[in-house]
Length: 249
Image (cartoon, rainbow, N blue to C red; front, top):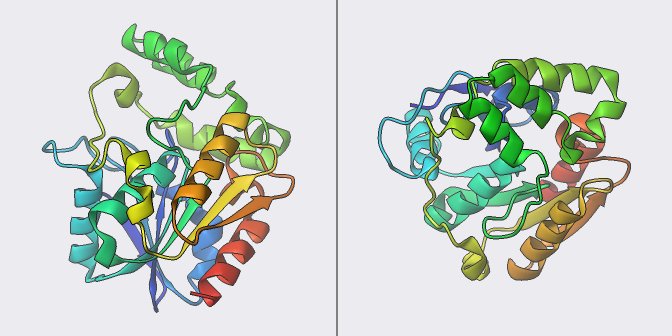
């Protein structure tokens, strides 16, 4: 069962976090959208306060069950980085439950992410050096923008300090409904906004381009001055972009 936090009333908007983080990363969005929407933030399996999955079902099925528990029939869905890949998977597996889709600096399965720290993090975690793996992960280029903002950087480090490295060691494996999504992105019919930070890595810009080109009618927007963790680095700009998009849905 996924850990979930709910606030506000109105149309549901669900936020899905990036790797190593958890639902608390969306605090700036909950504070904003909670005034007009029912905000739902989840911790993915093995992250934050969600345990390892009890079965081998796709993560998006666990998310659907969580929404069932909350009585949410359909939701706007916002995912960042790994959460973006989960959001796209949900759009393919549960299309009738999706009102609108926002893919922010989203990972695209099958596309080279070029995370230059990943293999070393896996090696350190499997050797029992969780702290070393996290410290090395924090040197990755995806955090270059966040490192220039002391308050944002402190929050990211605090969130990552609680991550146990289970996905690096193999103790937790995320399952996908559509493990080859690039072949099926054209099936997505929900209104879609693709966001990417101006200073995000070339690999994530390429993934944003691929999403925008393949999903029918998708809009692409670059957030000026931001790196990879756009929702935390430029929250006011991020929130306005999402609000403007939802207003036209």
